Image 1 (cartoon, rainbow, N blue to C red):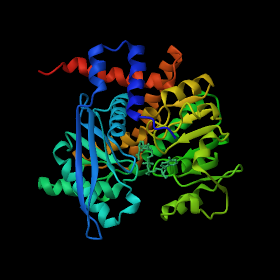
Image 2 (cartoon, rainbow, N blue to C red):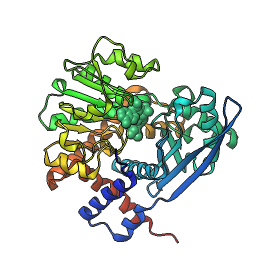
Image 3 (cartoon, rainbow, N blue to C red):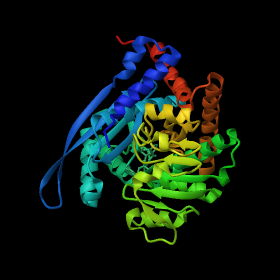
Amino acid sequence: MTYINPFEVALKQLEIVAKEIDLNEDFHERLKHMERIMIVSIPIRMDTGKLKIFQGYRVQHSTIRGPAKGGIRYDLGVNLDEVKALSMWMTWKTSLLKLPLGGAKGGVQVNPNELSHGELERLSRRYAVEILNIIGPTKDIPAPDMNTDAQTMAWIMDTYSMFKGETTPGVVTGKPVEIGGSLGRTRATGMGLFFIAKSITKKLGLNLSEMKVVVQGFGKVGKVIAEELYNFGCKIICVCDITAGVYSESGLNIHELAEWVSMGNNLKDYEGTTGELIPSIDVLTLDCDILVPAATENQITKKNADKIKTKIVLEGANGPTTPEADEILNSKGIVVVPDILANSGGVLVSYFEYIQDINAYFWDIDRINQELGKVLQRTFEEVYKISQERKISLRTAAYIIAVSGVAKALELRGLYP
Ligand code: NAD
């Protein structure tokens, strides 16, 4: 597969919306650049006794609307341009939701499956120390992303707290509940996707429970949306991870598959009661009603967009569709619900966690779900209205709100000095 640079995709998306809203040239120029880029070496003593150096990044695209916010990814494919793109997308996402936050992202170039638990802990703690001066509850608040989880956040929070000499839960979100995490955070991104799936199918006059669904990526995001849609009555005909897809035209038993992966297994070794194994790459072009890319960037491109056979693309991943593919999908009448709206439940509950930490007062799950629903409903309606009024895609509509919000903050704050 030819490599597509995610940062070029992000710049192109910004250019499209800049034209649409006649964005001030200075603001456009400013938003093309990251506020801060930190590249660090992370030396780790491996279990064998050997020293190994990993490369890590923390990139803050914008703090104009508030402290930067964004996840940390552990993956061999991590590179600076990917982290820059993910960071910029976070700025748009927090602005779209009108949260008092900016955008950031971090990553370490590593295959976490090759590291022992102890090595992973040392890597996470040393990475935390390397970026310590630029993170913090009023500066930049990391969270989990691909291949990181509540345990990773616990290590980062503990390391930060040891250095500061005070327990600082608000330095990260997505922590375990026992040390200041929020109820509902682990499932929040998938729950948000489910909420948006209900909203969009209603607008399109479709019955969600009758939908045939394909989910690419069966991790923290993909697994939860698959489970929620399955429980709702949808037929999930295929799910996949990086190793393989499991496909059944009559529908899979998602609980069985979820249990299989929660035991640390890959789907290529799946030995369940339903489904046959297929290559992961074939998953996206299966005939379905809702396609949920929930793996990584640049999965739907000009190479395969024409072969996509679905009514709705619900973007669980960040940046799964390129601008060229967007055009093709639009021309085929496929509704694409963009990442910054569809998967925004994650950062929203992260924000709830952050304010609970600051107030040292924790909400029950009913309140979390109620507030999640309230913000997502309001945001979805705003995006949908603009897309209808201006006859533009949901992505461009969402970007109009998001980029306008950041531009307004730039205007109000002015240029220092
Ligand atoms: P994860 O590491 O928990 O799961 C990723 C899944 O995708 C795994 O099943 C993995 O095997 C699979 N995968 C990776 N590359 C693949 C490929 N090329 N083809 C098929 N499958 C592949 O990660 P996650 O947290 O679920 O994140 C998935 C996506 O959702 C990422 O784009 C992430 O940025 C985005 N996202 C995550 C959150 C969150 O709260 N975790 C929030 C918003 C957006």
